[in-house]
Image (cartoon, rainbow, N blue to C red; front, side):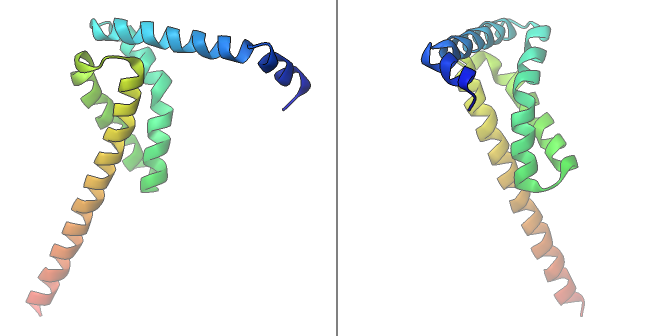
Length: 123
């Protein structure tokens, strides 16, 4: 950490910056709830990389991660009215991504188990 960063933090500047970002995200979130497509796009751009990176880390595939990220935001768009705050939608996005990944892995295992069983019965 540099001397200027320590000085800024001791003066509370980091808190002010974080508080501004949080309040700005909240206003964008509220506009997205009213159907403002540009606001939802800003929300998407603010949260997309975190969700994509989570999906990428858990799947190891850029293509699958992109598909899952798309699905998570599509679901969130349909449910945006039910969220109380921007923090709640952030938690939802992470949880939804995790659940989709688990479901995908589970269905892949079932497909593998089924194809293995088919091979055993055809011999």
